[in-house]
Image: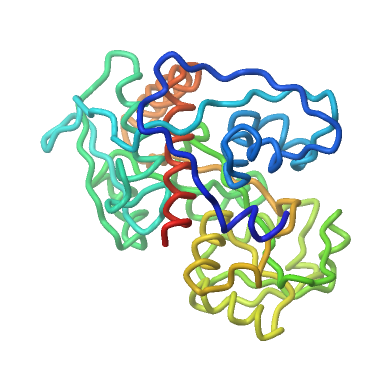
Length: 339
């Protein structure tokens, strides 16, 4: 993947909705990649994320690699940035939801529709059996959320990564919270200096490397049972305060790679003027899912969980799920281009 394939989009955002448009099958030709296919269909290699999320099961399993003859579903170009109506949203409601800003493109009050996951949650709540009214509270101090949810001041919170609870059952979220089915998957990439000899074909390539991930970010993908990179001392992990500190350390040669999600990486690279100087490796380090969480102490917790998962299943079987996801991916890359 080149620098232009992540941080230099010429986004193609349709000004109308996707009415009458349906995903179409496409047979991969010899020598094509998700990036060249995105450029062919959308005029923009950056829109590879549209193709990825429309073919997630296949592409996650093959780590982005496509072969001639593979059939991919090509989704419609992103539609209007206008948020969908939220008829069940009330100040006083039967279910109280909690989220926060600063996590674009997923949740942010300054983002169109307040973010991809926010719009998905609205759509799920409308799709649940016998839909109930709900309120939505924004608290940008994320450190408060788990305590507020565990104390049942709110019924459900989003979006949260799910640790490997089979491996770490006593981790706070595993011990105290139910997790919904995944709302969306987020790719965690390795970012390196342009021209670096760092390759990531297999986990063996990571041994002995110096990785940077900001303090407070999860590390369970580094410690999953087939890796245990930290506990076995196979990699060095540097954890400064901010993503910007990580990318500065990369430029200074103090670390070999920065590992953050694709969206945070692209935003930070653009904001620091590192376009063309820092590039992502093709192979993702991991794919992490975002969820709604509910306290295990909540007397209606399992009922809420069932209702939400049922609504999510209905939404994912509809065109609306793909339209929301593709719309926000388009908005994200367009913002990167403009900024």
